[in-house]
Length: 195
Image (cartoon, rainbow, N blue to C red; front, side, top):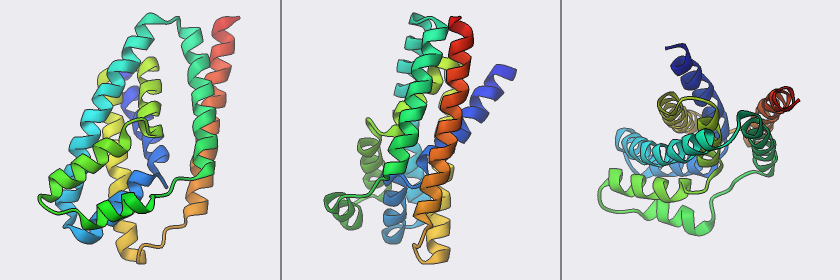
């Protein structure tokens, strides 16, 4: 049970941080201005659960196939890259914003479809793959899904309270620093295992 709780906690924290300021978080805020909050959160949850299930499958497979020292080294480099990616920032393109604002039909289907496509190849998907190489698949899947939904729900809540003005720079820098800390921690682990 300890391994599950560690995977759940670490995955939740990493993905929650990774989602802060991400384009899918901006999409959540945009959808919440058009639809009721509950259908938006259901669509986000379903899409995230599916994408992260695929992610942990890939990550778990890599974790079984590669030696742990090399996995730690690859994960460290990935987290340092995620830190740089986060510093660069993420914005909705005009096309993505238009689709989010003008979606018709079922809110759950519109949000779920948009989030599924937006998350493919996104840093949260790649971070989930990376985490699954280190931790159990179920705890990683559950923690990463809850972390992403919690971050998006927070964006919706804060956006509604503050009139959609989020402190993007502070969020971006804080998230980048946390990614670098995880990257350095994994790098030290890799060096210890490889020597």
